[in-house]
Length: 241
Length: 271
Image 1: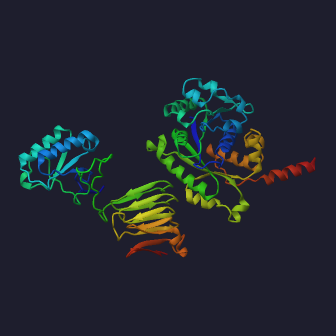
Image 2: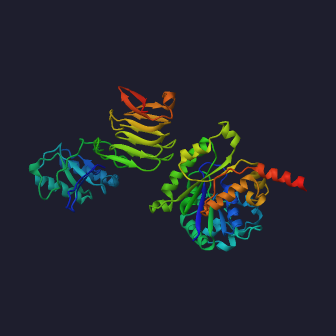
């Protein structure tokens, strides 16, 4: 998760921002029928709605402040706790209703009530990759069978990535060691992501879904420090030394 | 304070059981109180390698289930009174082991011995994860070939994730034991060399055990190689490894049988 903090010398308070995953419900008119439908869904798949924080996306309906308060209360009665509102008029929010929230990227995973409930909770919207902000630093080798999944930004590994290990990053991947496993950079569609390593013996290099397997790589680049980048639809590899 | 050691590898057939028996016996020969515990429920072998297969009455599972008391199930070695064996059950499977049961038995063994050496089954499933669960130290047995090395890498990752120590944020001490090493074949490039293995696994080396007929001969006789032929190359490698495990600083060598053979010839000539 992205973390921004502001701290000044002499101040003991830190202002920390974090982003969280939440489930989004999108009420549709007529509201009464929608609430009845939700009630039905709660009966068949309580785990979907009860427990995880819920945000109401009010884009499809126009409600007054009292109507929103009533809707939130109705949901609360059924065990669904609303932590925020999205796409509501600023005029109709205030005390007595949950605060207005803004998602970083549209409605990533709203629950479509027309479909039967899935057995597991719908994935919450993934935050937009924040280039240059989030970096995951791994200070030990990544062993065979381990997977590191970091959609929010770059991954830096101090050590080797073993054969059969997997690194997936939303941004670039840096390996200060031998890269023997599989690495996928720019997994969120970041075509500018790159892969760097001090010794290339990788099983697979991928950027934004375009990939090179070990066999496709230039033999002359094996065991050398290399970088890989995306050129159109092709992954290019060049020596760094 | 007793040390719990797990001998593990991921891959089967690399020499876990042989190494458990040889190191356990070597530590006992040096004067330590040692128990070796077979975690390979359903496919037990340690009793055979120790030559104790006819003396197993109660096993590990019986103790965890309260059917037998721990002292009843411990088999004292006939040759080394400081060495004991806790056999696995051959008729059950790995699901018969419970985490609480293992914790209780390991806890009791800690009170009774200096070293508790757990012989892990192959694989990364329940049996293997239970064997490593309460370990302070892990010995990763690796053959110098790619599949064994990759499986060892995998098991090291699991040691860093699924042991009690790892879950508490501590670290399990890890040592690499390279077995079946053939210097001539490594020189010809038919085998990974030691530096390659160490580079891939980035784990400190406990010892290099040369490939030798002595190991098979000892196993077939039901005797750890360190007892059966203490002067053989593998036995000397295991003695060095045991001393390193105790914290001694010993120069890393690859002992060979040749010296012993030469000694024998020389001895014969003198006689």
